[in-house]
Length: 105
Image 1: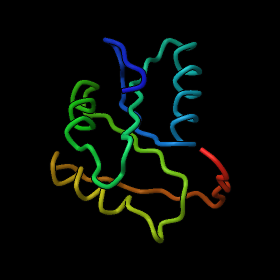
Image 2 (image 1 turned 90 degrees about the vertical axis):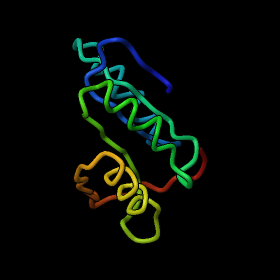
Image 3 (image 1 turned 180 degrees about the vertical axis):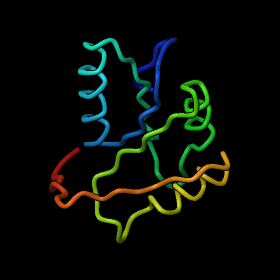
Image 4 (image 1 turned 120 degrees about the vertical axis):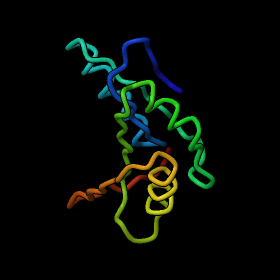
């Protein structure tokens, strides 16, 4: 975990550039009195399902996974399936129209 408090309302998972954006969002939300737990999974294969689910349970079952890529050629479908099977929930994916190029992490 990169950031946590006793009154986090949601768990947000991000890696590399999305971790940076998650931390920015955490700062902005905290200024409005909303705390979020930020998790860096460190690896995506294998994904640390235990840590992610533990954090999600501690934040009322609320989980957001932030990714910055197109649906093709990624690990998110396998990771989403692994997480949803472990917690018996459904996960919806949304891919934006623009994916920024990442040149360094």
